[in-house]
Image (tube, rainbow over all chains, first blue to last red):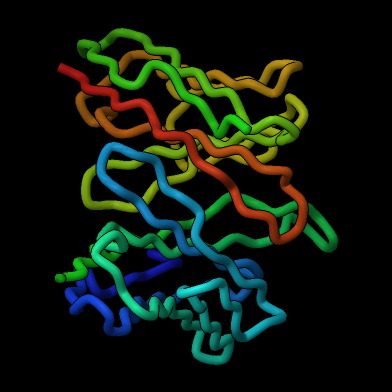
Length: 117
Length: 113
C-alpha cells in the first residue's frame, strides 16, 4: 500500500525548458511535503518543501505546488540545467499528535530526471 | 558546518553476521532517523530517535535495533544478516520541529554475501 506515489520512473527534458515532476499521496494526515534530489553515491539532498496550509512555495528555479483536494503535488524546475539531472524523491510526513513534532518521512519511488544540453 | 556523517561508507558481510552502523547528526539536531534504501525504491523508515528516546519504528524485524547517545549520535545494529539486508542505509537528522526537513548523510552501502 503505497502512500506516496511517483508514477513516472523517468523524465527527459531539454536544457532551458521546464521540468515538471509529479507526486500523489493517499494519507490525508500528511501535513508536510518535501522534495529531495539524489545523485549516485550520495545521500538525498533536501531541495524544497511545503506545508499543507500553503498551495505554493518558491525557491529560485524550484517551485512546489500542492493541491490538497486532489492529493497531488508537483515540482517545477525552470529553467532546467544539465546539473539538475538526478533522481528526485517526493516525501511526506504527518505530525505526531496535535502540535506535536514531525514524524517520519514516507517516500515515493523516485523519478529520474535527465536534462539534455 | 558539518552535515550528517555516517560510517563506514561501505561494508561487506556474510549471512548470519552482525553489523553496526554509525551516524553523527548536524550540530544542534537532537533527532536521528534511519532509513533503508534498496535499488529502485525510495528510502524506507526504520527508526526515529529524539533525545535518546525511540519515537517511531517502521515495519522491520526485531533483528534491527538502534540507540541514540547523549551527544545525539546514533548506532543502527542488524543481527543475523540476510541477503535481503543488502541496501544503502541512510541516517537523517532534524530538529523535529514542525515543518522542518530532515537532512541526510551519504549512507552506508551494506553488501551481504
